[in-house]
Image (tube, rainbow over all chains, first blue to last red; front, side, top):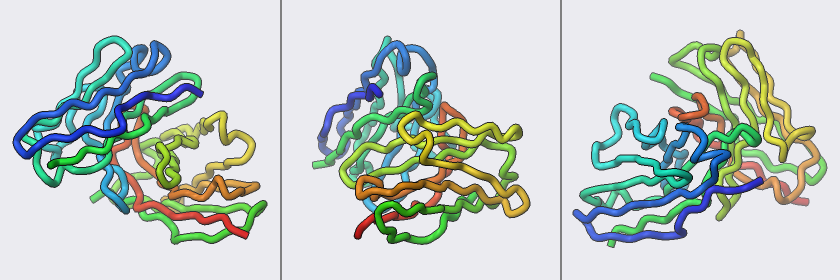
Length: 110
Length: 117
């Protein structure tokens, strides 16, 4: 089973912007607009931040945005805040394997 | 408000089976699909399977096919996930989550399962 590739870590200072990439293939990220992003704090359940590539659930800050180009999806966070420090996971539908998750990216707000 | 409340932590011996429950409130269980996802320490989340809304059609991950069974008790608004032939590699936190393929919008609190002899 193939996997979605994310950078292991990213960091930024409060107020800055960062982007996290999620690279898959034409069988998952590139083939469907079913990419979602989840924020996970230690000991807590994941929280949906972006769905359908670009959509933000109600209650999620507009500082979070999603995009996709080819087989790579991206999550952008602007105006970094200390509470944004968490692990972030992308996920994509794949016809062969249901849902596929990325390896996760640890965001550190310096 | 929508809530998914899972059963408590489990400690199992190798070779046993574990059954985790997920009780839904704040919405009608059969109007949304429900997925099962697990995450072992330091590992990526793994999708295990889902039961569809309405039809109750079930799709399993190839990785767990034959070992995992998802069931639904509509009268109790509760879904269940049973995993058999446990090994230490099945030690993880197991989550239920509501939604379609493009989003898992509500998650249970997670059920830690430890497999140890």
